[in-house]
Length: 426
Image (cartoon, rainbow, N blue to C red; front, side, top):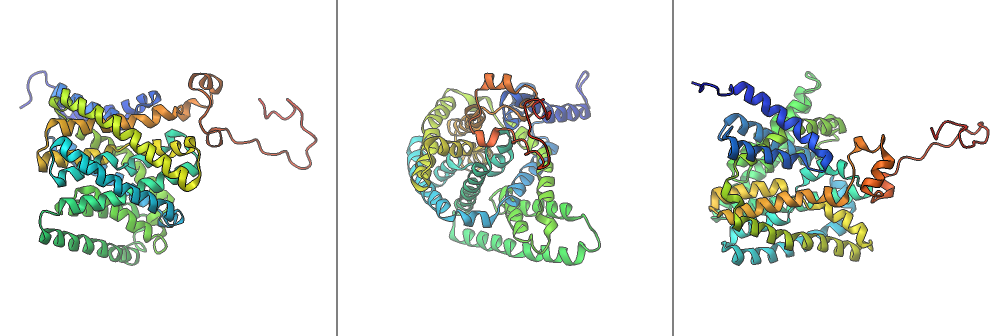
């Protein structure tokens, strides 16, 4: 029975919807990512108000959020594009594996961790969150060329990281790992068959059902991989990649409209995932040890990651340091995978607040860096007050990507133009 004066649960959910869907968007004008605002709202609700902790509804909405986000990331994977830049991406992955080994060997003694949790910590520190990064590129003002490289490197790195995480979590025994590999292989093999049956038996009689089918398959596979012990995101990501490969047989399943629909669906539910992650934070996660660990990780890992990517691209492609940095900086956010791994480390390996809290501080700050460093004003403020914004924020970092489109040439029969004669300068 509700306490006298208590806010009804229905009103709490309404207020939560408003807070998650409106407040983060308002704060984006200050270059604060919506995900960070949602985490902060969750921490405030849990630590400050004692609301929604252990709420099954929030847990379900959170699962839909992480599932749709990784489904979107999988749908956005273009294997042909990855093959076009295969040599450079392969070099990037080799460097990444070497760095992963080095970081694993370093964090183990520093945090007094066994090998398996040390590998997970290294993955949390090094792996860019592809889905989150792809969703946020539009607000960073990157050019098409920069978007191509950021997308390719983020997706390729995350593929390797998910495979590594799968092996690490299932490596307690050879038998368990073998069963998990077989189960995942069976899931991957069954997905194309499910898509074919749907294309032949359902689509002709139920047009426009592709979105519901894709989403439900992603949710089912996400729960299947969760049962395998590798979290929801692996199953959803695999479904997205499979749908992309099935595009020729069933074009609507991975069309641009479908990708946009999944992205919009994710944009509604993903805030609940970050809110749920904020609810799981505790006061001791931000104690002196956690803050010191987070500061140390930021001081070492951010320059290391940016420097390695910039150096590799300078040697492999001959880019300037500035051009390479514009690829490296958007790859810094590790938010989603770090939150997932931090939760796994606490639940399965009972890591202390210094490790858990240090990872949280590290990922929250590195997620803020691209918007602060690239200093791109929000799109809605660019046009009406362009001169003012140029003074406030400085000239665009990439003139090719941020400059307004050139005016079309006059028709061949038009007389020679002169200032003020065509109205184009008005």
